[in-house]
Image (cartoon, rainbow, N blue to C red; front, side):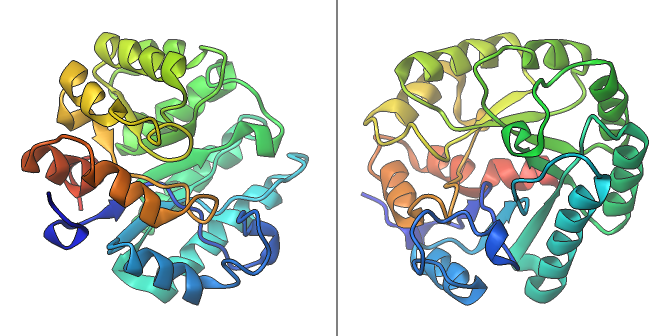
Length: 259
């Protein structure tokens, strides 16, 4: 049995914050600030973490989106290499989103998202507006992290942009997880991070590796919404080989993000 200290662990899916309105921990006081945030991840064996700053916004003005991206850059400046920031876009603001992608890319950002349409007043992962934004993402060689939704518009994006790596979040319950795996078999640019609902169902990670290999899964937690230590141990206690764990815990994230 391996332990966390045997691996470099990168959490591909977190949501750091500078303001209380961006702190998505469900229970007040559990994660009061970024000091506790870092302490919890370090205690779980996680050395680096990625993700976007999220907040429920109206979607009426791009200034709301820009502010979240600025928070991410501020956190990057404060935390250094420990934090891997993600940038938000919005299909209601195509020109502004593309400009923001280039600006953030110039600042060293290589991750888009996690995109959370439900919190920002947009719905689908493919339409004419997003097609233009995806063209910018593809040109910049960025990776897209996105919240799993019930509808399947992501298939259109996967088909239209094979040069973009899309990393879906949350394996979900068995029916959803099996749908993820089928999509991974159809599209080599579709990956899955292990955050949120799903891997508390024992055997799911090992089954996924058996079906599609270890190169398509990234370790993630959705901290501070979810308990980071639980996710580290959930993966460690699956029946996986050391090379599987190395790939999932950090190797795949480093390869995709050029770390």
